[in-house]
Each structure stands twice: as C-alpha cells, then as structure tokens.
Length: 120
Length: 105
Image (cartoon, rainbow over all chains, first blue to last red):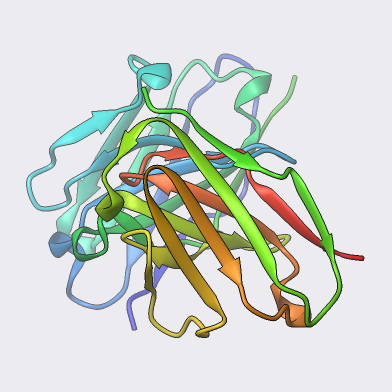
C-alpha cells in the first residue's frame, strides 16, 4: 500500500520561505505524478501545481507562478514544494497527493498534510 | 479557467435519508476528468468517484456519481453516520468546487 508521508508543521515569518517534503513508500515513486494542494481553514482545497517525479517536469497554477518551486530527489523517493515570499494568506494545510492517470487525473493517495503558519 | 459551483452549500439530513449533491461547471468538462472527494475534519480529502461515475477502491456502493457536460451529481443512497462530511467535486485534478457540507439534521 503506497503511502505519502509529509514533513512536520512549520511556523514562518512574513517574507520567509518554506519547504515541505513528501516521501513515498514503496518503489513506485517515479510512476505517478504528484499534485500539491493547499487548504486554508474553513476553505476548500486549492490546486498549486504538479510535478512528474520521473522527468522533473512541473506546471504551476497561475496564482503561484514565480513563488513556488516543486522538485524531487528520486534516490530517496521524496518530492518537495517550496513557497517563497510568504504572507499571512499562505497560512494553510499543504498536501501532496498522487495523481492517477487511470482515474482521470484524480488524486487517489494523499499525504497527511503539513500545517504552515505565517505570522509575525 | 473552469469554475465549479456546488449546491447546496449545506445539506441537513437524517441517517438513512438519500443525499443528492450537485456540481455545475462553467464550461463543458470531459466526464473522464470529473472526480468527487469526501473530507472529514483533520483529514485529507478521500477520493470517492472518478470519471464522473466510477467508484474508487473500497468506496461503498451507496455512493454513486452521474452526469456529463456541465452538470454532475453525487448521490449517497442511504446516509450512514460516517457519511456526514464535506464533499468536493474536482476537474482534471485541478479546480475544486467550494464544497457541500452534509450535516446531521
């Protein structure tokens, strides 16, 4: 059973950067693309972008262009999402999720979430 | 960009009742790429339905999805206590609707 395990909660000051990791169990890391999604308290999920662990190709949502970078380290089956120039509105739970092309690009396996708090 | 609008915002029902949730798209969505998720407090979303009508692994058959084009529906046949949650539709692994909360009446 594939699992995605994310790094722990972060508290950052406005203007700082945060880097969240997402480690995949099993040996299928490069077989599935990864979405990053965030969710502010009481709000619906918001898609941030996706990355192919196989090729490193990325696509970012327009809202995050220039502020987000998604990378991976295939030797340790880990994906990363870095968000720069943090502001209070970036306070949210950040999730990585596996994209299933067989399921129409739906996300069938999710990480547990990483809470990022931006506060002065 | 496709906008997904879900209705109602909140659905107040009793266990055993039938729930019907709607998701309307601002443009035609290919059914292949329409998914439904369930989310409970403190948990990530859970995939219920993909391809508009296919149940994900382990999802009970009281959950069913239908629709095409710009109108999609998630139906919960008979509500169980564990079904009270927030439900989101999503297209192409990207845009989410704002959610429908199914609460106990």
